[in-house]
Length: 442
Image (cartoon, rainbow, N blue to C red; front, top):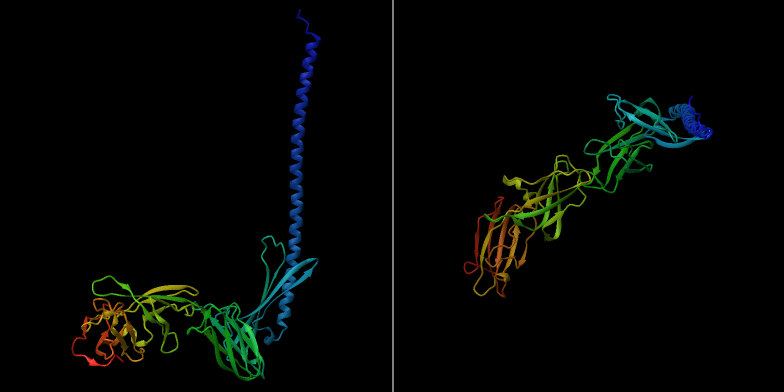
């Protein structure tokens, strides 16, 4: 017969089993609760997504309706009131604020590309578009509606005329945001659009002055403000095209070379840049009052894609290409700066002073003899102890070099040199001990 199990032990086992059962029940309850929360969140998210999608669909439908209404409004306008229009307004529908941007641009009838209209001899098109946006679009694209209107330009106004200008950069893209104005029988103003166009119509026929300009921008000749006479013909539209872009800067430094020595720094009074795209003679000179090791154009240059030839001096006669030499070349991007080193050939002279006269006391006068290349310059203190010019670098061209002894009754001697090779001139002796002429250098 099996021994009897004590009642106390049985009770302990039962209590332990009950405790374990309660723990398992608690875990199951927690798992069930978590599952319930996850399912609830998913259900609520689905409801929220459906509601948001429905709301966006309603907003998009409202935006499409507003865009179509705006297109019809623009089609009803007179061409003269519509051309080159860009406006923005807001309209509230069912508590939602919509932004409506209306735009009209010219479309070329042969290329179908956006352009300024081309004159009164053919038909172009106005492309009208309405773009509608609203807050919290959730990556939804704006609603855009477009339409084309055929416009015979000469028929926009029978008794009046129009004027169209296009401002374009070196890339061919339009120069946007440039203010312009017309003064004459009527005074009007405008700002170039994204295609660089300003369009005026409904103007009384007659002579006008066109003006446009923007700080930091220049035309091919470096003019920030451009002014030009023009005219308006009744029943027609004139078109004008202007290159206009962000100004560029050139910084020129100067060097010279004497014999086999390494190039050394030099000073110049002017630097010239050249490009055939500028008005004749196709050059611009930048001068300084005191000879300098570098000269800057400042932000005054048009950024021609083919760049500028550069040389020292302020005259066309200093162009090294006239003497079979090469000129430094600089290409500058719109709004950018470029640096270039310019060679001034060395004018090599060897001066011998009269007895008892210090080299530093001698007066040296240098006169450009190339036509149009400036007046004489010089002074004392220009010679080294050995009798050479301290800075022998001079722009290309021909010179008369005169040296006098700078005394009460001076004597002088003068030589001529042709400074036409990058390596400089041969050494020319100037001996003031004999063969001199009375009087100081002119």
